[in-house]
Image (cartoon, rainbow, N blue to C red; front, side, top):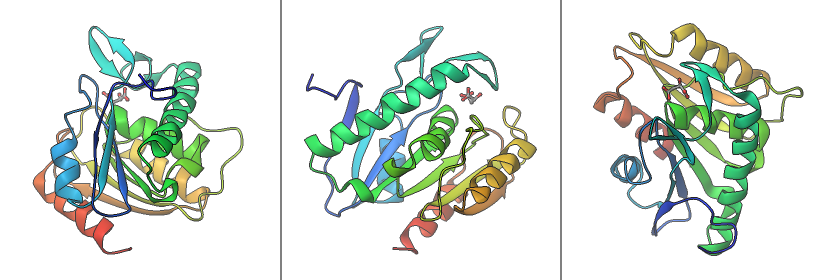
Length: 205
Ligand code: MLT
């Protein structure tokens, strides 16, 4: 393994300057979201790490004490570790560090939100499917140049819509340009929202 590239990951080169950082949900792996990434932007490079924490054998990006209750110290440490990995991968694969868009699902969306809050320089934009507030930082970062799209499910049994709304308020409070969409869906993604997220990404460059 190359120095700094300390996450198992999949890398797919692209034909544009953009890189999609794909962060899977609990029990996923580095391959899961690659088709989703390709659907959202077929020209972008793809960097897709596997979470290092195992919960009953299921990979995650940070520890939790129970569903929706996070081990905040672990989350902070893992957020910095992931940001350092993204920086090392950008050097190694010669990616434009200011063109990285994260697409996170569930646990991956939560650590993506944590990256925005703790290491905002890592990301240019974020698409967060089924996200909640990962932590509230002591000092809010300046997210005035960050764009965020959030897709929530009205019938999500894991993430209440009020939690997603709290995340929207936190990110907007830090200056981010946040678009929130609620779908008639549960925790699973729907094709409709994937298309809407793709249109959002394609229409602001
Ligand atoms: C989390 O642990 O990040 C959330 O509860 C979502 C999940 O992965 O189930």
